[in-house]
Length: 320
Image 1 (cartoon, rainbow, N blue to C red):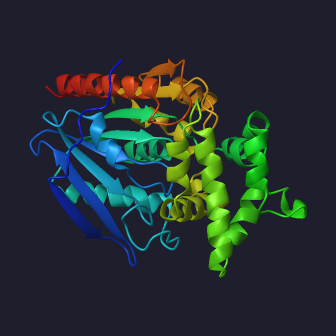
Image 2: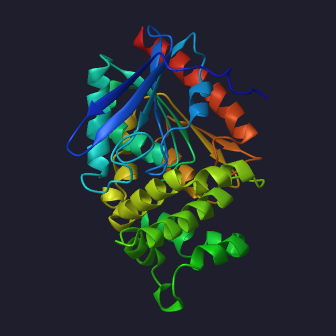
């Protein structure tokens, strides 16, 4: 089983101003002359983690990490104004142009798969290949599964903690109830709701309990951005039209793609990936038996490392 590559440090860090008040953080690692690959993080609002650099051979790839609006080291933290899917797609194009890249590979998981797909369907001529994990189509049933009823029946003990900040009479629409608290002027109420929201996700993300994943999700800096921005997007149907991703999938024809999805993914169930693979028959769906949702799970790591090199090889071959 393949493991992550050794730790590396960025060659360059940039701060890129986009529409006010947003300023994006991005970094470049690996070989400046290598095959460019953009890491598209999850959430929305999750931000990049240092270990994301390690999915790629630093001698072969020009590795680009971008914190989306309001997330990670981008500022202002957890900002909701001017934060919609079309804005993030435009930011990706801005970054591509800023770095002087003609075409690139995209590496995205969870919400990162959503955004990668929307970008690729909007700018197919700029995408050499896609490596996607934990497919999230952002359909109403997908939000309902994780934030209203579905995963709650698999993890009823964790669910009790998710329900705790919300009065009984508001539990018929938990996303709306959380949104009221996450946008409250009461900062204590905000952070309490944010931690409950984020820890619920962290607890459900791995097949086997992983305290370090839960601790990361529960860190106040991570939790406030993740919870506020996710809830903002879900209140607005992720700023997507109904079935937009599947309906526009024909635009992906000819783009090499591998879909990696854990069999026991409780955050974004496997039916998301199956639906995408039917709409995008050119993609290779790989169902990982011993895994849930997280990119850090050993079987997912192994599958992603193999997928990156396979998609890159096909993309280079197709371009020759």
